[in-house]
Amino acid sequence: MDVFRVEAAAMRMSIQDSGRAGWARYGVPTSGVMDDHAAEWANRLLENPLNAPVLEIPGSGARLGFLCDAWIAVTGAKGKYPMWRAVHAQAGELLEIGELETGLWTYIAVKGGFESGMRLGSASVYPRAGFGELLREGDVLRAQKAEFALPRGVSARLAPWAEQRDYSRPPTLRVWQGPQWNLFSEAQRNRFFAQSWTVSPQSDRVGYRLSGEALAHEIGELISEPVIPGTIQVPENGQPIITMRDGPTVGGYAKLGVVDERDISWLAQVRSGRGVRFQLVNEI
Amino acid sequence: MNWVPYGPKGLLFRFAERVGDDAFATGCAITAELEQNPPLGMIEFVPAFTTVLVRFEREDQAAAARVDLLSRFERCRSATPPPQSVTEIPVVYDGVDLERVAELHQLTTGAVAELHSATLYKVYMLGFSPGFPYLGDLDARLHTPRLASPRTRVPAGAVAIGGEHTGIYSVEGPGGWNIIGHTKVKLFDPSREGAEMFLLRQGGSVRFVPTSE
Image (cartoon, chains in turn cyan, green):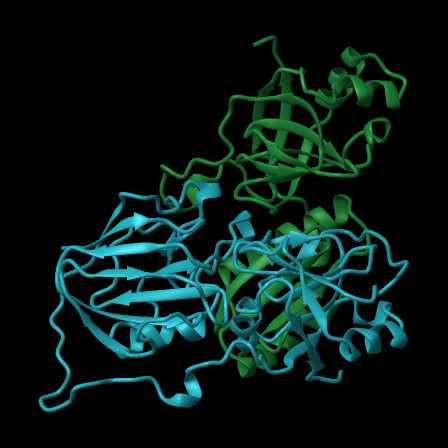
């Protein structure tokens, strides 16, 4: 069934699910939602499978017009509409992603999940490989028809407060030692964990660039090694780059650490210009 | 052979110190070993020039597989290289960086094409973008540093040199290698199914065939 029409598109909005692990050896990035915590809650509220395809919207500017009555859930970046709850939207309603208070990525789930072609086992759009396309004005999004009702006498279903994240206060993100940990001096490693890093505007689904007091090193370029979402690479300019969902599968910069996969969702929601801190979780 | 953790659920094995025939043979043998006998809970493995990353669904699975994988990979070191499946790729040597590469090495553009097409290349790995092959070993007379600032758009099919390697851009996108030619052969075809999307495989061989169009 046709769920809604894109009346105005945000830059780079797309359908994503939990991604296509297993294909990195052919050079295919994992893709998938940037904030898996928010996307999973949107699906959970509607009793969808947690990896059902959702609409991912970066920033503001999107406007969606409902073409039928549908159960939806909106999670992620904080906007001025009911969030983190199951909502019954009606045909003719408009949902506008206007000014956001906190965070960057908004997720919309629909009961039954959005229809999207499966490529290499995933609905995640990755335009560079021709796996689907970014959404444009006029596109109509369809969903599988599925029955849904809240239990009799229940008028609202919300995510617990503790799960409704305040992205303006990210926790200190957990980091594991990376393959080149020992090539960095203790002073450089301490400097990484001691400061608040600013997320640079050149950050996207491919990678988040951090700027701060440089981690000068003379490790040089290495033989390319695998990288995964969360890998912290430090080029010679000393400003770290963290690989994100659409990032390359190999990289030749020194890898200081790996952001714990549970904290990538927090990192994703840090807007450019805002700060983020890290803490070490393991000792070898 | 050694390993380091790569997050709590990943193991990165280093099976060689430098790129070359030994690393190639060992890397291919490790891939065959993982394909034929995947450890419990392995969700993905990513082979590179001298390392292979093995990722697991859970931490305890990574810990359980560590010792066994180390000894299995150790046995792969004496492997003979895989039989060569040669893919011929016709190339027009007309890239935007061809003249600069030739000047840098004090060669004619024709000599660059000749040297580049004289080698039977090994596919060390696929990576960077879907189906992009890292090919070696490139004649030392053609080693060329990457561009200081990458281009934002390189077309699919661009044949290029990056440092000590050569490769073929499989999809359009940003890139920092020196473009010396182009091919019409599709390295990546999303209209096909599964692994059929990728023309080349780690362990394969490539011969470039100069052509005028």
